[in-house]
Picture 1 (cartoon, rainbow, N blue to C red):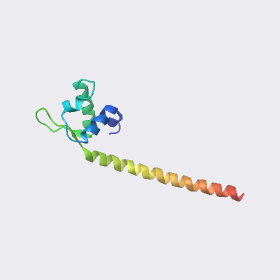
Picture 2: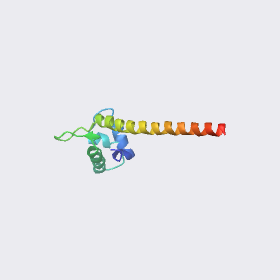
Picture 3: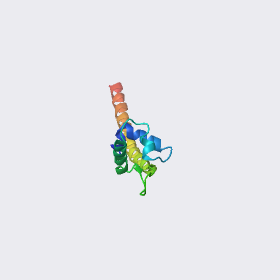
Picture 4: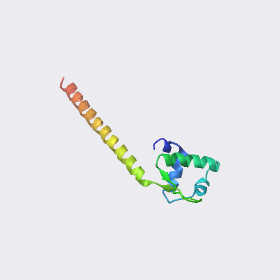
Length: 104
C-alpha cells in the first residue's frame, strides 16, 4: 500500500477520489498522460486495495476503499507507540546520566 501511494500522481488520484467516485476519464483529465498510463496507475492502486471498480460495462466508477486507510492508520499507530516508548526510555536514561554527572 505504501509503495502504491509513493507516486505523487496516485496520491493525487486518491485525494480526488476522497471527494467521491469518478470514472477513469474524469480521473485522467488533469494529467498530461495517456489513458493507458492512467489505467496502469489505477491497477497498482487496485492491487494494493486502495481503490476498486465494480464489474460491469464502461464507464465504471472508481471508488476509494476508505477502510484500507483505517488498517494503515492502525499499523502506523502501533509503530508510533513503540517509537514513543523507546524515546521515553532514552529520556529516562539521559536524565539518570545527567543526575550522575551532577553528583560526581
